[in-house]
Image (cartoon, rainbow, N blue to C red; front, side):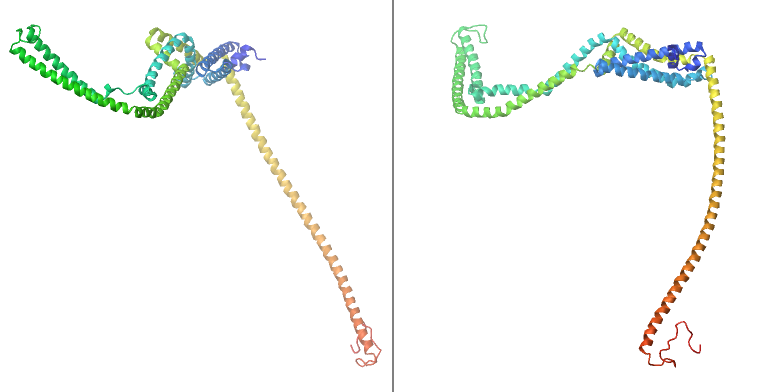
Length: 467
């Protein structure tokens, strides 16, 4: 029966059957098993937190995957511990253990990251809000630049809508010719006002003006008055010209109001649908932006928040480094403990070496017996094959003799039958011949045949005369 201590010792890389014979080493391997189990538990918690935070898995599914990950880490750690054997010399052992130390450090780093994120979750949430606000402002500026044409189109629609509805018409003052005429009137008015002020100054002698300061209707006044009269004449001409141009523009604009409404309505039929589509696109883009930023709470952005917190806060950086080093050390502990266990062989090592030597001896004996048995089996098979060939040869000889005897008997019988058949056929032929010649003799019985008297027919078997 395997006790919990032996089970932990087996997880630590020991053999329960040998640990029973070495109680001191059983405690050491049990402690190693406790460390491996603790590392696996930390790995399970880390994977569970990571899946719930980054992948948004339900807690049940995250726990199942986390347990599987913990078992995988337990198997990897046990493999690393078992594969590290005692070497001759510390430096040689360290050199051999470097790949295993690297793998253990990598596993420890992977395990520590989700746990560190979980420990600093409140601080990370605050930093995440800052990151989200920055991203929203930057993306909002890009969105506004992308849809900058909406404001221009909206202003155009607002300007064309009253015209298309007949609620307003183009203003006469906005006509270019009217504007030019009004500018000429304003210029002439300014010249007249200046000239009139100068004439008044010369008349009253006001020292605040630009005149000579001598009151009365002297030469200076008369010259200033003439200049003011000329300016007034120019002002009247400019005013008359403006009134004429304004009247013409008013008539022209009044006659084209219907055309302006039609043009505005036609332009609105194209401009309004385009404006509405752009507004809908902007609203959809805004929703996508807000939703994407709200859902951006995965592992990558949390790592960015952790990096920003560590860069701006030395205490945070030290705490982060300390926690990461702690979790990495937990993963490295089994390998380091195996490496630092010393070169002196313990009772457990001696028993394992003895069992391995005994197993090798048994293996050699088994191989020798197996080879001997294989040789005997091959020899027996060869003898059986030879005996089988001899039996087949004797059987073949007897079969050939029997076949010859049977063939001889069949030949004799065939000859006898053939003789009987030939004799029977001969008798049949003689009888046939006799019958034929008997009928011929009967037909010629009054004539002698070969010197014989008629009616004397010899027997077929009798010999002919003189023979």
